[in-house]
Image (tube, rainbow, N blue to C red; front, side, top):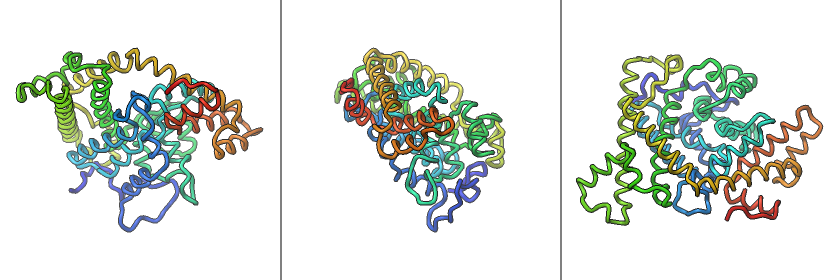
Length: 391
């Protein structure tokens, strides 16, 4: 299938930070995808969680399974819009590389710890992982990914951090947050594929955990319309397999509806805007979108999940303990940096006496904690504090 003129073509990439000869059998975006899959941070995602922590069960989503689901959805929609499938897959697989242990609880805790040292943003940390923290090549730090992949990874960025990025790399990935332009269509697509994926799998995991029920989901039209439709086609399905088949078929149809709606609405927006190339896309409003009706129904689902799942008492109790683990680890490592792994301890030691040493040393600690898995963070906290807050 030929790419649309507004898609990112690998031969027209804005390139890598460090020049490298092209691969003989792979496009530039295929190389990015492969580098991401083989990197250490990607492997760690299997033990980093979404909503339910790693000890709560083997069947709940992790950052790794979530990233794979985002990649699958993004590729499907990219094909329908004639966008670059290799690029969307690379972005999708890398978008959570900088996420902390314990999901958003860990991120919020680490951000609080870093407030006087510049804060912590997981999208910016994902970029930091692929630009600096991975140590695989003799010539450079990081993975040396293409501009377009890095741009897609940096989904959000505060003006303060965007300004810092612009000073380090003029005209680079931070610029669009300062001039308020759009990223590539592939990046826009991955942003919404992420949303579709986590809404769907949080329903699945929430019901599996017993924190929400299909009966409660009847108040969510995007879910209940399909539940009713399925029961008309398959009477008695609710009684089979403890209701799991009904749940899975409901989620499957909901996913299909969102994918088809986004593809159709985005195709219509592209026909109306008529962008002729990627540069034109950047100057237009966001073109990858749901129809107004689907956007409204999706928002109702997100509101339901916020109140019924993410703020559930059991989730909040675990969240508080996870945040305590992260905050106490941060304080312990900041006071005794030699307790970190050898490479991070050495980085911290080398900063002693340098200008801005306190902030730089805090960033080393944040890098170390952000790279931890749930179970490693739990074990480290127990080792250093003598307390076991989480199983």
